[in-house]
Each structure stands twice: as C-alpha cells, then as structure tokens.
Length: 354
Ligand code: AMP
Image (cartoon, rainbow, N blue to C red; front, side, top):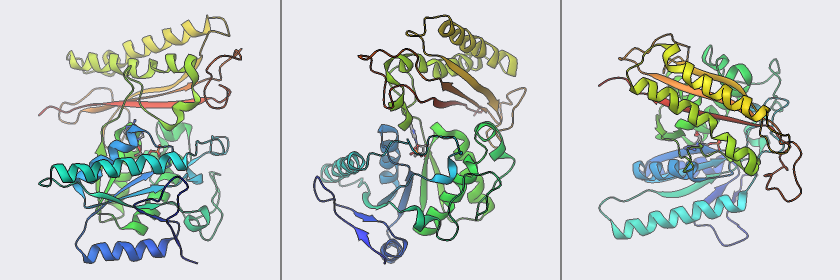
C-alpha cells in the first residue's frame, strides 16, 4: 500500500517523508501545477555539513527541495562496507529540520530573496527501489542497470567495478520518481558528477545538474560520512591526501603543465608519508595505501600527459586507511573500533584559462 510517513520520535517533522513512489508522484504533480520548482539532493544519509551545503544551494535555486535518503546496495561491492555504512536517521531528520527553520527565518528577514523550503524526504525501502529482481553487487549479476563506459571503469571504477553502475542506476530511478528541475551533487565525488552529467546527456533526461564545492575540515580533510570510522590516530594522517593534491595544485599555479611536473611532487610526498607511518611502532602508526593520484581530462576522466589551458584538468586521488593496530582501550579509535579500512577520495579542479 502507498503510504507517506510523517512521524518522528523527537518532534513532528515539517516536511513529508515518503516511503513509496505514488504519493510522492502525486505530491510532485501538485507542485508542477502550482508552477513550483524542485531541486533534488540524493544522499545516503549520515548527513554532514557537505550534504547541507547541497541543500542550501538547492534552496537558493528552487521553491521546493527534495532530499532522498537511501543506502543503495548495488553501488557497494561484495566485500565493501554496505552493512556497516552509518545510519543516523534521527540526527539526519533533526539536521534537515534545523536547516529548513534557518531557511524560514531567512525568508522573514530577507523576503526579497526567498529560499526554497525542504518539503519532501524520500526514504524508500530496497523492495521499492528494486521491485523485480533482488539487487545484486556481483559484476555479472542480473538486473536492470544503467551502464556508462568507459568512464565507469576508470579511477574509482577500477577499484570499485560495480560502483558507478549502481550510482547511475539508482540516480536514474530517483530522477524518474521525482522529476526534478535540478539535481545537486558534490564536487567531492568528482567522477560521480561526470557520470551523472553524461547520463543526463546521453539519456536525454530533463534536468539540470548542479555541482557544489567540497566542504572541508579546517585542516583540509574533505567531509565524508565515512570519516566517523577513522578515530583520532587515523584522522590525523588522513589529511595526507588533501595535502598531496594541494602540492600538485601549487605546481599548476606556478605554471607547470606536464603530468610529471604536476604529479611527481605530490606522489613523492604521499609515498614519504606512507613510509613514515610504516616505520612507526604499530600502536602509534596509521598505515595507508595509495590507490591512485590522477591527472585527468574533466569530461572523460582519462589520464592526460599535459594540461591544455582550454580544458583544465581534474586532480584526484584515493587512499585506503588501513585498520589501526594495537589500539589502546582508552584510545578514540572511531566507530567500529578502528578495525575497518576506510577509503578516502578527494580532488581539486584545475580550471581552464578564461
Ligand atoms: P553520499 O551521501 O555520500 O552519497 O553523498 C551525497 C551527496 O553529498 C553527493 O553528491 C556527494 O558528492 C555530496 N558530498 C559528500 N561529501 C561532501 C562534501 N564534503 N562537500 C560537498 N558535498 C559532499
């Protein structure tokens, strides 16, 4: 049966929470007839300031903001962290409610530039999102999927072969369900934004893709729902990725244009840091492996040998923080006690000239 949920344990929510597709579609149709505009922010929950910056931008550009909260199983590989992915529904609803109150207050103060309101949360079950075949994470598993190649096989896709198939598939479903005027994605997941833009173009989807800059901790670490797993020791070292990318960016800013000139100092820095950690005592170190540091074309994400000033480039990287060793009982070891490896990604856009 189609239902919409409005209950929330801490206090009543000022927006609709939809579990099913039909009531959401009816609601959406009503908004269309009222000539309202909808900005959709797809998330997997565990919201942080990065997600909220997407919601803010959506509220600046639409009368109504929709947020989807769904941990999509098909984008997780078989050995990845689907089961342990953080789920913080109550805190997420409180954060969204608080933000919406901020929008309302701003509209009273500055009525000339009204912000849209967060009016719908879509939090479906997997049976709703995958109504026929059970979702599979197997590369050769059966199902109805959206596949974009070769982009989905590069960089993140090389280490996570089903990831972009899962992302494109779930986003196609979300776009079909909510018919958004605009969709909002974070630059933090840069390859994802390229995949989504490509999907919108190639499948003639009637929506605008908007990309929002990465929110960071004061030391430069990109905010991520997975950072809660790090704990203090790994958290301190995790900034190495942003620092390496900054080194590469500095090279570009100094006029360097070749792959070697831009990437070599960054790679040297990252490898030296990795070695430093290896040489520390197990109870002190935070070991990490470098998956890639890349200099790629912004449209294809293919590696490039030289940055062309007309195109610019994407500097991106991924590292895996290994499980913490010899964890002391009084140590802040993060969610999961420091036992889970944590994959971190980050990027910087090297802008074209002009
Ligand atoms: P997720 O819940 O991790 O799937 O992320 C939902 C959306 O939030 C995606 O478009 C992400 O790119 C975006 N996002 C995640 N982290 C950040 C961040 N630090 N700054 C801005 N956007 C982010």
